[in-house]
Length: 581
Image 1 (cartoon, rainbow, N blue to C red):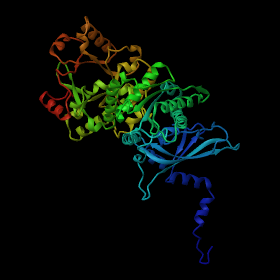
Image 2: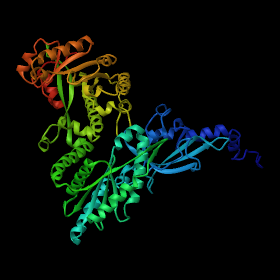
Image 3: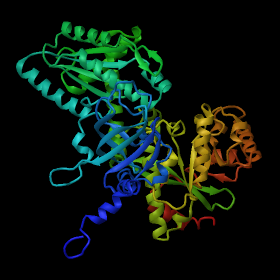
Image 4: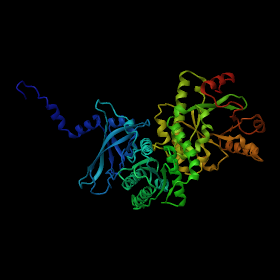
């Protein structure tokens, strides 16, 4: 007691200190630092509210997930103590700037610290991860633009920084009348290796690849990652053919020692194409295209080879990769390049509108020789299909909300959107399954949404697709099959899922002898499976007349109503009668 009989100020803290477990729990729960406790395998056991705010998730959405699901390393991965079976002798504490993957698709830079929690034998059994948001001097949270020129997986310059350095190097070479060389490196069969070891281990191997390649180039050269398993080396000084070949051979030698993935030893080789300035090209785009062309020449010779420019391929590949560059730009800025139109689906007898399909259209069609649907295979090959698919879904959700808020009759119509195959394979750029993405769109109900599964996506890896589709069903989403009859699929497997519709291309009736019988057989088979057939592609009266009497109630095509912008479709509904309630 003090001289005035009052309890000293520190007494309350002393009382708390007598209950250390309660004090620790209090600190964990109320800390403004994100905290996560994982088991020895890196599986999340417990999180605090601060981490949920940083990651934009509820605590129920974290338990049982690997901690790696929620962040992406900004620099080359190394052997880090994230699991209890880490190599003995490694540090039990590690700190690194990472990108926290938020549930809304954004990435937030944070400082992550990992501390091993040791048992009585001084072995790590659990791990404590702490996440601190990075802020500027005035307290503002830094965003991802601070690292816009750096590839987050390898820590190497990305295409934006490489392009800047290339432009600078070409300008200098032109002024000084000197040469430079560009090496295009493609890791042979890396996709197969990545599929076999998994994406997390694949990212680690990419980091090790980058480290080895970095050791193989000279300090005055620039090594950059273009994406996937492709790298580029700019030889800005002494860009002679001899110097370029010497560097290319050193890079291939750097990959010779086997890579390890768990208890497996993997051999890696690289195909290298070399283009020279000014002999092969005089600008950045042409130089890169020429080097890529040479890489394909090297690849045809076999794995682990190098080649200089093959001029016969350069012009053709320049056009191809210019298109791919334009498509990539469009996908990353979809609001500038795309818009959604909607094509009505009708009851053939009453001509009442029963739904509508979301259809992609260019905002500036004069710039493109073909509609967006023509490029879907190219987008899938470039790994861009999921990004475009998500934009379509988010745009349709925004349109549906607006229609309901304004009491538009469009808000009472179901909307169908075709899925890309990568969503079925769960091969997404951020490793987020489709149902996880949809749960964070702020909707209380999905009963208005139909997702159309391409028939060709149901021909392989059915179990993985089945699990995803069943999770989509639990969200209230209805499922349909796109292109029934045009691709082989397992009917027994098809009957295991609750598909409520399937589109049948009416144009099959005019493609071959007996085409009408094929359409009719497809419709009868679907009806027998309790799946509603929809005749699509009915653009001409002659085709519609040929299919009169076919066992399909629903139809769609330009003959009945072309794809239209939402305002035009609302006007069309007024002129053609109300939607079928």
